[in-house]
Image 1: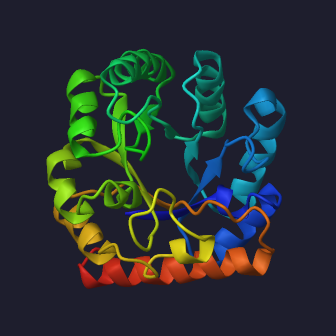
Image 2: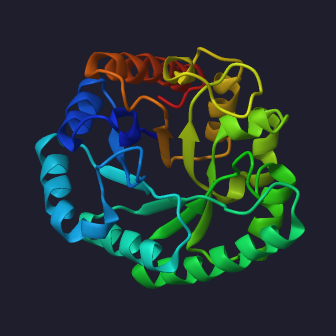
Length: 265
């Protein structure tokens, strides 16, 4: 498994800070944030201007960009994301599922939209991933299976995020078995309790909350998963660099220990 940090953790700082400190914390790669409002890293409206700088930073810090997160399902925005991914060399683009919880009509709409976006991703040669997200149409294992069964395109995969599965009142360790064959990306963080949000940024660091992340990583390893595992901590836009680095370093130490404990490293 290749450990990375979603640059949204450093959303209040420039792109170089994200690369510099992700590398310093010992990560293998970086996931670039294209999330408007949370960062100004990969701004898709001007991706042709931004892409060369990201490529240069990736080379300078010897840190591959293994994924991109962009929540919109807008076709034009997603095509820009795929184009940027090809230019930078990003293999995975993560987006949100859209829709509303327990709303059959919006679940069907999400399936239709994601299916078309998967076709587009395939044309660009990149992998489109989507994760279950509390509050959206795809939010737990049953709705995830609905989407995966409806979209068989090999350019479409699951972004598995244990924090959302946990907050959907499931056990993420047990939930993996039903979907592991389709996992192509993992967003990882911890959380305390089952509230709607993941909590304060520092409480999202792996090991701070209630999720059995050791068990989660063990099951991934047992099933042969060797793809990206990116720490996604939101809400730290106003945090100073040292606070962001502390979160990244603490989480990386926990992830490394988990990988060693289950024989993956």
